[in-house]
Image (tube, rainbow, N blue to C red; front, side):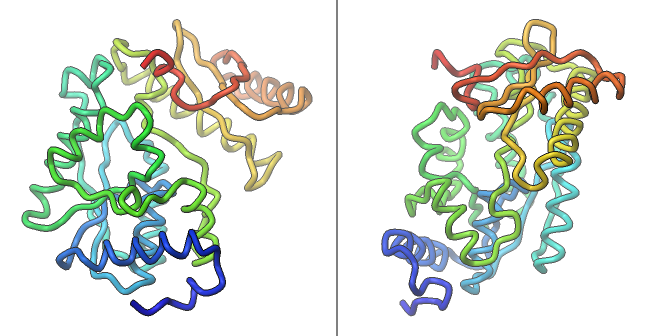
Length: 277
């Protein structure tokens, strides 16, 4: 296999993973499909596949559980990169384990989502952006992917999140430092009924904090999550944020007449409700 120009003079370990990823992708029958959320991992997979000349298209789920901002971003990005995108509308709140936020909601959501994708693209291989570190965390949805024979090339090539960022920068991927924004349902405790008004308020708060933090930090905003716990919204952050910045955020919240929010610094930002899993 010939090395591409962008693979020259990079870390040998990362180069080996990239060549393995190329081998995996070029081994799929064409055309294939990449399920793309608009997040970093699936965008990187799509961008890399394009760089090595693969024939594929993108599929994206929309619905109440997806922030419309993410869909708009993906549509813009896919257009700019000349990638065909199919948006598929889903009503996952019709699934009882999802609506009541069961521990295994991710399994039922993924099963329904990817079955729908397969119905839209019969006989085509479908890939997703699961990477190696996802396979070691609490991810009930991975079982659904396995049952449906969904391919996870990044995991197969042993790509970590840092590998994705590092190679993304090298190959010119836009926004390679993109922060993780896990499914909105992870912002609620298990066995909590997901109500439309609370979900909309949570989305509005995430958008508010992202906008305000961008004013202060530009593209290097600290990672955060908005969660709904015991009837109140919480702003969770991991890295140290100066008191002056926190005071500014609280002041802007009051000015905007947005619901009160509890501020809490955590030692670990992700997996808040999975601590005992």
